[in-house]
Image (cartoon, rainbow, N blue to C red; front, top):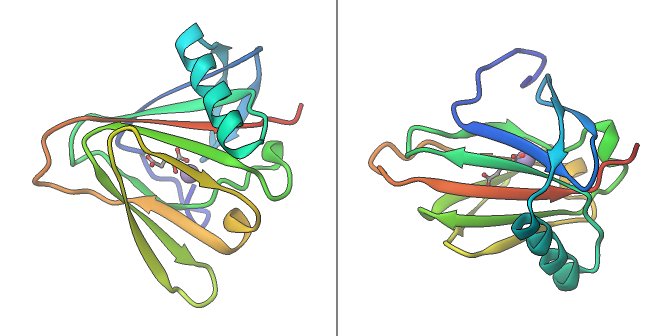
Length: 151
Ligand SMILES: O=C(O)CCC(=O)C(=O)O
Ligand SMILES: [Mn+2]
């Protein structure tokens, strides 16, 4: 849901965690599978890096530059106030955009293969983020966004 309107998200998604959760994301309800060992190790690496705990991950596959994600904030109630989100990127580098909710000031960050982006503090309260289309790119990208779901 963007500004109250439903849109299809052109990318493939999976949701998993250290137990079975349900999570409403962009108007869609996910039920988590138990995460594989390698994904759990990445969650531990994220925790070592930023000090926050994670119990779940939304895994996104952008099959090529046509797949994208529109403006949104990760501000679902299940994440609590001022959530810490750790976002790993693998494969095709893509531009990640941030836009301030009031001033509309924008920043572009290139998320390269193997990078880890941490969003914390007031990021979700004051900023939207998006991953725009890049029609010339034909390679895939995997993004793992680790979150802490409060049950
Ligand atoms: O693919 C990305 O880097 C961002 C994905 C994202 O914002 C999300 O899944 O909530
Ligand atoms: Mn997001």
